[in-house]
Every structure is written in structure tokens, then in C-alpha cells.
Length: 188
Image 1 (cartoon, rainbow, N blue to C red):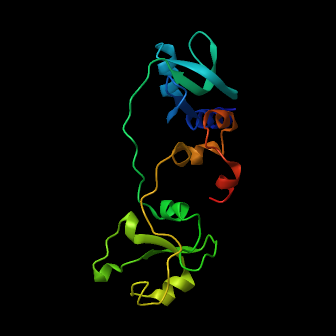
Image 2 (cartoon, rainbow, N blue to C red; image 1 turned 90 degrees about the vertical axis):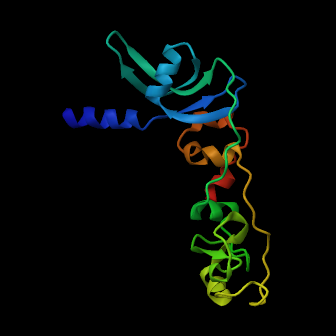
Image 3 (cartoon, helix red, strand yellow; image 1 turned 90 degrees about the horizontal axis):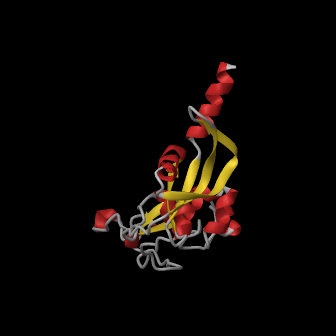
């Protein structure tokens, strides 16, 4: 009995809630506790409930929200993309930028090698298969007689980019995220 209660508590703690702005634009993701506070203080309304998940208050059993909408519009700055290996691979659609092979076994390549003054920035990083990265070595693409399929750059941060990892697990969110595409997530 005790372990079942503990598992139930862990499941509730991991429940993510999609927060929509007043205009139904996806804003962020919070945990159920934060969502519960926003709703109870009248700052948000529940649009969707989590399937069968509830939380007990001193006086009643309350269904947990899955999607909430803020009552007032919140302005937020345009988010910037984080420079991580996974995000570079995602930007390049898990494709080697030299030979075009689509694979999960990619490496990061500095177009202008770091020992030649190349920086670790979006404009100088591409996804490369191990064979192409080895072939290029510490040379520029021109010196290695290799051409890039696309010029690298910082990706535009979209709603899809921000919420892709949560969308797989929360089917109720799909109708609130306009850029949701199952085929794109399958490739990630």
C-alpha cells in the first residue's frame, strides 16, 4: 500500500501542464502545483484535465489540469535557442551536412576548425557523420574539397521547438500547438 501511494505521488509530481497566454498562444510548461495555484487564485482557467489524475485537498478531490489559459495577456521576450549538440542535430534534421546521410550517429563539426580561430557558435557548427568529419579533419571545407549542403545559422525558436519534448507525452496539448507535426517528432 505504501509503495502504491509513493508511485502515485511521483506520477503527480511529474505531471506537466501547458500554460497558454490569454490569446491561446503556448507560453510555457509548469508543474501541476504551479498550475493549481494560478487557477485557485483566479489568474488562469483550466481548459483540459489530465486523464484521471487527481490531487486531494483537505476538503475534496480535485482533477489535475493538463492545459490552462491565463486570464491576462503576458508579454515575454523572444526565446533564444540553446547551443547544444542535440539542438544542432535537430536544426540539421539529423542529417550530415556534407554527404546528406540521415543518421542518429552524428558528430559536431566546426566548419572553421577551432585551432584555426573558429568559434563554438551556431554559424560555425554543423552535423557531420563520422566518415565525413574524419575526412575533413582539421581543415576548412574548401581545403578538404567538401561542400556544405546548407549554410549553418542560429535556428528560429518556434513553439514546436520549445514544446516538442512535452508534446510526445501529452496528446491533449496537440490542438493547442499549431506547429505540431507527428512526422517531425518521429525524426527527433
